[in-house]
Amino acid sequence: MRLKKSSYKTRRTSINPFLLLFLPYFDELLDVLSLKSTTNADGQVDICLAHEPIKTSLPLPVVLDALDDVVENLNKCENLSKASLSFPLLKLNRIHSGLVLASGEGLPWGIATSAFDGLRTSKWEEPDGAKGCWIVYKLPDNRMHELVAYEITSANDVPKRDPMDWVVEGSNDGGSTWHILDKQTSQVFENRFQRRSFKVRSAGFLCNAFRICFLAVRDAQSNSRLQLGAIDLYSSSN
Image 1 (cartoon, rainbow, N blue to C red):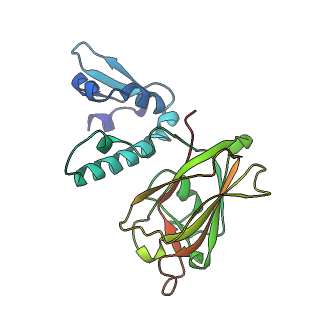
Image 2 (image 1 turned 135 degrees about the horizontal axis):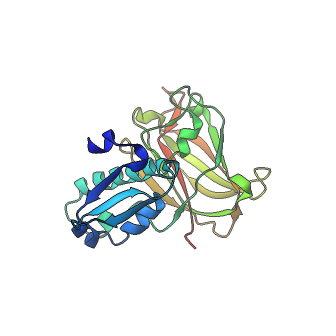
């Protein structure tokens, strides 16, 4: 409540410094979120904005969504280990700030940009996607990335709309020609909001655009749509 009553630009919260012993990369996380930490007179660690609020408001929902995923996985763990605390594909760079084009989208809640907003609670829905559809992610300023892994997250409902077969392609000329990077068939999402990771074995190809062609959904007999919660693309951290 104290946070809500204060100005967004001056908001701050405190954590016990003891927690920092268990979070060795805490400062790096704050830096990514354009936040900073200071130690007050009582020995508590204060967290506040380091730069303009917009620089925090964009990545923060993505990080919180990933934290929700970690907490959910921890609740399913019988034995706590270091691997249990790992973020999805933590050592890779998530590709972001691109432009999105798709074969179709559902308005107003299933727009194409929701596929790449980093949030599993939103979704892209293609009304005719069960027959086959595609979505393109084009990087700004012709930036080049080598795709080494990607994640697809199932949407909130209707499992028969889940993607099952797809092809991931990359382009080094803005989408004029395409090179196959990965193929998947007969993939099944067993749960809602399930995040699944796939490694790209066609390494060494720099791209400034990516296209995913979805060829089949889980049930195309009684359903005409495709939907998914998120697509996350990752390049090497080097």
